[in-house]
Length: 418
Image (cartoon, rainbow, N blue to C red; front, side, top):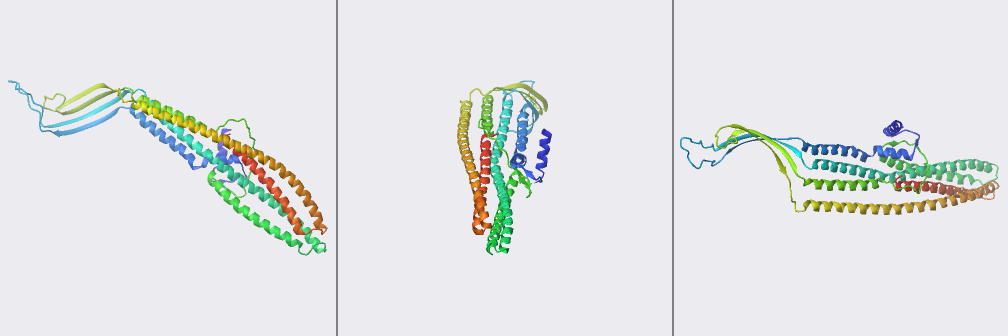
């Protein structure tokens, strides 16, 4: 199944969407595959890998090379003269070259804490990308259903056009046999020209919407692609599963990681070291000659008292946790308000659609009566056009409200995160 999904995403993202149909789920997949922000995940992962590698170099031995030559105004001398055992005075020009090796033995878990903090940073920043991508779903929803509505309007205009063309033939026949006024057909022809204008407007508007949607999902949608009407089932019992929820938790983990890092900074650190060198003088300052020498040992570094610096840093970090809790509370409140608004919109549109259906049935009866009256010369073609336009407007309202209801349901699911 995973292989099929991967192949599907591959073909969908291959420059141009060449299928006859496009679904809302396709748009979501393409957005997550092609939107430029997605590529930051890989960049952040690569950066984090380098940062962690840099931190772990502290475990490796440090090798330092020192070479120097000096000239000094005075040198160490014996304060007394020993008979028959003269001590040669040191040269004022001195030379030294040595190599030092320092190896960390113990640092109280500082490296591990630093690594954990970097990984927490990575997860938080990657989740922020997920949040940004998720926020784009609202824009995709709006564009998708706007295009879908234009498709519905085009289909309805086509139906109206076909109906008028049939009626035009009937009217021309009625004029021919003297049953209708000679200009009756002109009224129908004017209406057909208006339909052509409306069709052009819809085409241009659709083209602009499709272009915008194509830019967001990263593929070119060809003109004959039909957007599928999704089946939306809203489950009012589902829990909120927004990526922001995971982001808040990761931010808290990040804060805890930094609190742990601060605590580790004051732990004692133990190093092993060794220095080997060659110089004049060597370690024996009384021997005026070039000598080899070495020093080896272990040293302890422990900042016993830091004037409560670490404590204050941790208290400052803890305030971030409180800020995150506050942001989470605000997010839940705003999400709850948005959900209530969408539920109200869903209920309103559902009621409106029921009214639209009743209106359409009544308009059809009125139009049927007008059609009979037109054939018998009781009304003019203009009156008939008025009634067919009224029916068209009622059907257009129904389709518009149905699309708006689907959009409200999708928005509800998007707000909830499922």
